[in-house]
Every structure is written in structure tokens, then in C-alpha cells.
Image (tube, rainbow, N blue to C red; front, side):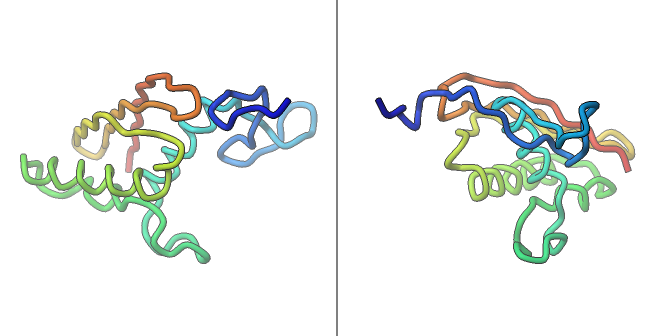
Length: 129
């Protein structure tokens, strides 16, 4: 019997960042953690960092030192939503994004639904420069 693509499988994915675990194997992550790690990659990768995908990423890190304003927050939310929909739109549905720059730190809170399981997730990402 074939499994529906919407039914979660008990498979694991490579962990991010790529590393070797205590058993001497490539570290793995369950599906929910893998999705979260992919979101983190999209958020904190700048355009041009990946040779084979020069448009990959959101460019959020470049906005950390910009003057804090309502317009900047709205622009950042728009950039993040666009990047997540472009690169992960087949895996997640983004519901809400909250961006908060605090001095040299950026906090991004994302509420999303994992399409495969229809489970709502909330993840907070913090990056310090």
C-alpha cells in the first residue's frame, strides 16, 4: 500500500548545520526539526552566498543595523514572507511573522503550518552580529 504524500513518514533528514554525531555518522533530525532548520537557513542566508542558488535567502541580516521603524519592520516581514514562500512554500504555510530588532540582535518569530502533517508550529530565531 502506497503512503500518501501528506502522511508523515518516520524518516529522518540530515541535521543542520551538517555535522558528525557521537556515533561517527552524519547527524540527523526528525521532520519537524528539519523544517525548522530549513527556515533558519532561508532567514539567515544572504543572496549570493550559495553558488548554485544565488537568489536563495532573505537578506534579513543586512537589516540588523538599520534604523528601527514601523516601515523597516513591515519591509522585513514582507521580505521574510516572500523568501519563505518562494523556497519552502511546498512544505509550509506561513501564518504570521513578527520581527524585533534589539541593538545588535534580531529576533524573528514565525507561526506556520507544516503542510504534510497540518500541524501548527511556532519558532523563534535569534541572530546576533
